[in-house]
Image (cartoon, rainbow, N blue to C red; front, side, top):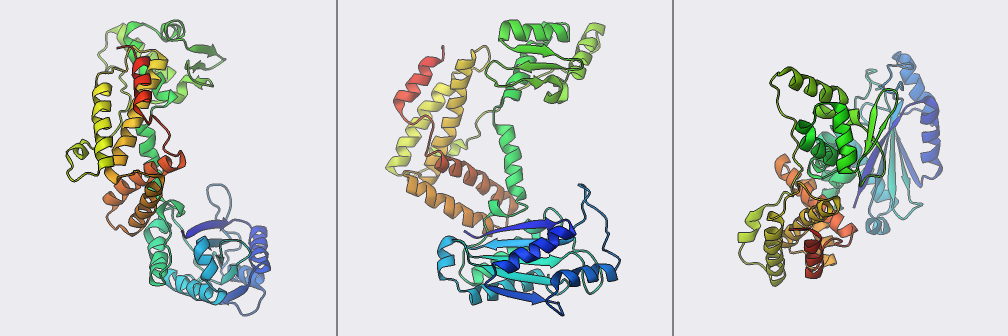
Length: 399
């Protein structure tokens, strides 16, 4: 698997040290648009000529003095690639990106580790027109990754997987979706507040009810109320819940009710496992898939009879385990994951599909499955794995 990262060089000292670092361990160095080997001085001279030596700073108060790309080959490929072949690939990558046409660029090949890797360092200011290199968050995914993967594919090398790219926006979207799909302590708190908010008449009464009837710990400081869920390890400031669940919004809600003003109710629903149930009607299943299908159907029958409301926290945790197990069964059926080896193969296949897929919607769907199956691989298929454990969870929950 190839990996590429980009570092922003934000100070002159950082630029000088980066040049020294990549040159020190280099087995083959190439330079573009330099007259001498005084690389740092020539980069600074270009900035001075165009009045960019003290340019605008970014949000953190730092100006970008250069850019440093690090490209690493897979372990197996590193065994066979020569420094000359890597240098040839570096030249092709630079041509595809168009960097060496406008910027003083320095490349160095390092082979001191298990993974052979390329360092590409270039000035932030163009020696042709003085314009600064402008890098936006989505540039790697939208512009660079496809061009670099084209070079790698043409040379029969592994491509850069989505997750390792600097701006893997699909990965960020997956993380956001995961937040929506995962039951967290904050969501449990919101759910509990929504259940009792219309049974009390003030914020103080709400907090007392959470403490006495729901087992919460409640503390006040000079400005804020903080609460700790019974199964949580730390306190959470009420205002950090955001939306309708902050102290201000809850107080406003009680004021509206007291004055008889009609207002939307505070409601909150806990997320459920997202499963494509059409998999249950799929034909030509293997024996393993049929076995998992039977378990999933039985599992769903059990889960559908459960209600999250009015349960103890031990019971609620058991129900959450049911939801997670349903997703595991679904993935096993869909991809016929009958062994750890098959899981690893599926992860690798999905990785390649994601990188090469042009349709963004399909890419996102593939990536969600990829992340879930990769989690399954990492945890070695942890979770509820046999009928005895299902019965154990079932017995934990009072019918």
